Amino acid sequence: MACLLFVPAHDERKLQKAMQLPCSGVILDLEDSVHPLQKQAARHAMLEAVGKHRVAGKRLYVRINGLHTSYWQDDVSSAMRIRPDGIVVPKAEHTLRTLDEYVKTLQANQGPLDFPIHWLPLLETATAIMDMEAILASSPLISAAAIGMADLALDLGTSWEDVSLAPSPLLVSAREKLALVSRKLHLSPPWDSVFMKLDDPEALRKDTQIGKRLGFQGKHVIHPSQIEVVNDVYRISEAEYTKAKDILAAMEDNGALQMDGQLVDEPVLQRARQIVARYEEMHA
Image (cartoon, rainbow, N blue to C red; front, side):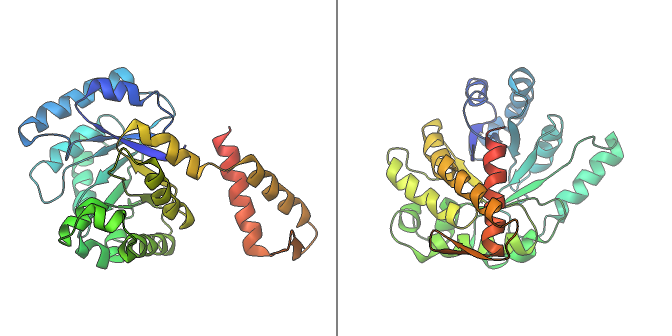
């Protein structure tokens, strides 16, 4: 499984359903999915729904409101009560040390947390893309990141369709930069941006393939209908697994060799190990 599904934090029915879907995890959304007048009610509803429907082994994240708003501190405080696998931070443009300091304050007042905290910033503006490395290096709690393509398009004065559906250098270049910066900083592979069209699975497939080719770990999705396409793109086939096992076996006593017309050296060997590990993890 290679996708995280956005679910409105206050929608218990959708959360219950999402927990049974073949996705890696769920992102409970306190930002765009919740009207400003419903933020507090959404936090309470989230706590109650998670208590009823959380499933062991399904990752659970919370997207808080941006650090430029008056909501994020209450969002973080509420999120900590459900022991999330990570906090998704939208509109990340500057250092995340403010979040680090707030968590220290929470622990000073309420006692130490008994679970690890991870930030997953969303890079959604031109500033964020240009200052990406500084942002992602600003906190040791950042574990991975993603680009919010819709908000990035808005910030650039264009449309999501223009940067995501038509051949666009931005579509690839921003992701390339994220892949490279994430690797340089030893973060986990990035998550790919959501695909906004729900009625075009082939376009979704093509978009998803870009992230896979860049080494992303998966994709954010906004509807259950998108899950199977994303999983299929990221799924390692039995043939790929078998070939990788053959490479590992053949390389045990050789420094480099040829298989099926391909030079097999150390980079190919490392990739074979990755394929075997991911396949066996997915089938454990």
